[in-house]
Length: 347
Image (cartoon, rainbow, N blue to C red; front, side, top):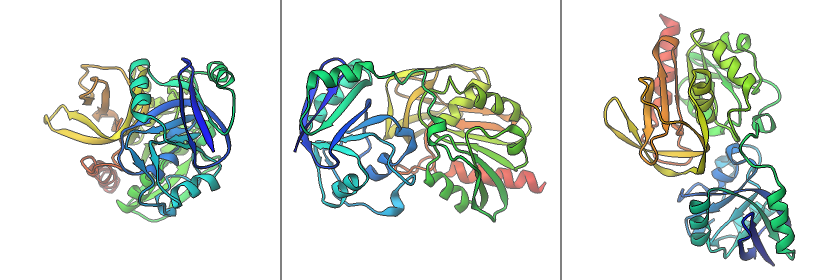
């Protein structure tokens, strides 16, 4: 079956449908990760987005339930140069995901780099390209959209009930690999909804602010809770959690032209001069800053990739230390934080 991608600027890319019939509407973005396609599609941070893979072959090592970062896919559609299957394409079809193969992904990525991420429609089957472009232009842009509530748990739950440190995870769209890494580091982990109160969270030894989709600025209530927590309990923010901590501390965030998505992003650790190769997935960022608390910066655009507030026992990173998938340069950060929280509680 044929299909096509229609961008809001009128550009159309044609391909072949390999999964569910129908159409999908969202923001067209690309990721440079060479592995981890199942993890990427199930990452809640990709909510409301159409993913283009820059790697030319996707699906060649199959699927496995343990690789999923959440119970269901969150990406609206998948765009590939060459889809391999049948395990991968069957998996997409069973979950109702629209996916196209045969897309000129090189040209599409160049377009998105030149113009920035674009609103778009993916159609699997016959359809009017003119109508699809019109639908793309009519949808709400990503800037200004608060999406955490749509992907967060609706009630608290215990992920692991034993450990040397009791950690509360605020779920703005949390990946399973973060929870696994925390439990593996020796933490007892309880997951809370995005709108948990500061009093609920302050009862724990430490609070982790998770990743998630959308624009951080509209999340005013979540930022207020974080501001109330500062100085009361150790905090670690990851991705969207980093951006929310930044807003709570007076920094600014903004929408990147085409985002940072991939498993090969270089980040400078200012204190040591060391460069970490990191896994990232975000369309918004913390504005560049020379402030002392800015501990990590992107070597692509100097956006703030990490913050540290020693007096408030709060820190954050824009990249993903759980690296699910991705390089392991930042792996020690989660274990070190759990150890610090446990030692502080024992003292």
